[in-house]
Length: 75
Ligand SMILES: [Zn+2]
Image 1 (cartoon, protein in one colour):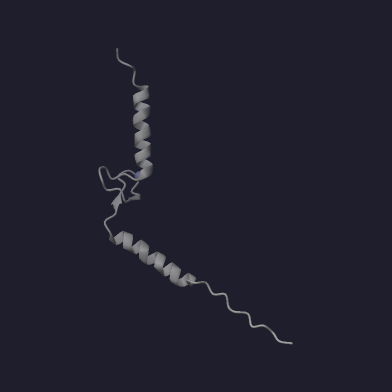
Image 2: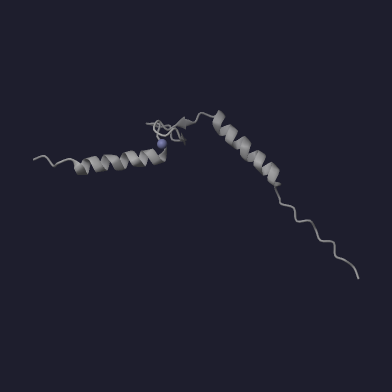
């Protein structure tokens, strides 16, 4: 009666290394020129035009639409 040696199921990338990689990536993005949203200071990669994150951009756009709708139609 032989016991079958079970192969160790190791993850392809150890969690520690994965964590280190994640950290280095986040450090990379910090070192890179990252635009910060002028409203909520969230990081945004969209540096063209206004420094707004997508959330504030959407809020602003929806606010514009609201203002347009609330404005009384001039005759
Ligand atoms: Zn924002």
